[in-house]
Image (cartoon, rainbow, N blue to C red):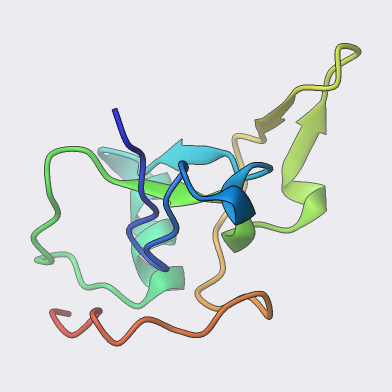
Length: 95
């Protein structure tokens, strides 16, 4: 399965994406509302069935690192819309 960031459209199979991790958009609750607000979407935005956001939309402090070098997204992490590593996507017109 090819993974793609819903916000910036980064794919996991491109060489520049080798260090990216992808994180599922919360399905419900307060955490989902925080993510919607932070990314500029309204409550009625129609998402595909599976939505993932790449690690470029989170700061280093949003992750916990394990002894084996892997990282996991902290439960209280909230994404940011724009990161200096890429331009905003013009395909985000349906808000």
